[in-house]
Image 1 (cartoon, rainbow, N blue to C red):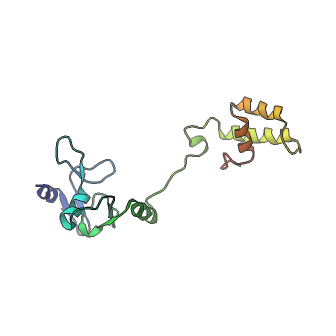
Image 2: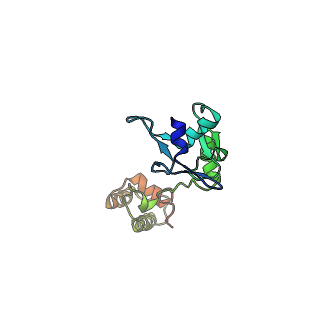
Image 3: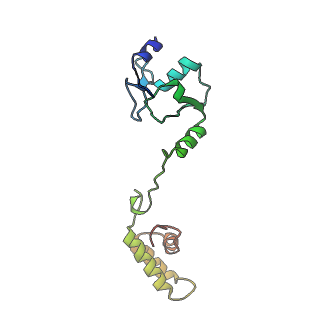
Length: 162
């Protein structure tokens, strides 16, 4: 029954076999086998139809990088580590670090960082350390801890700001 459902939802092009049925939000073809079950991934179902069961812990990867493709010659097995390495190698996996003000937890702005650094080095005045009273005043002014003020001043935090 599933084999019949698979063949009616595939558009065979000269290169890829494109799944024309339902797709998940990531663009992978899906097939529902029951009213309350989790949808099955079409490329995994095609792999199993052609090659047999997939060992536990293995992923079905795409050589063509077309998520809707179910062409068995474009599919291969690999671990999750293989999947990540394949994505990195093909430039599909880019982690975007949320630094500074783009981090949702940021309490200060880029301008605050510059002001903290200026105040810290001015308070230091050529001495080895900033007097604790002045350091505490800078921290209170910006609603941060003394430790965070020191990290910002020494470029251990907010390193992207010159």
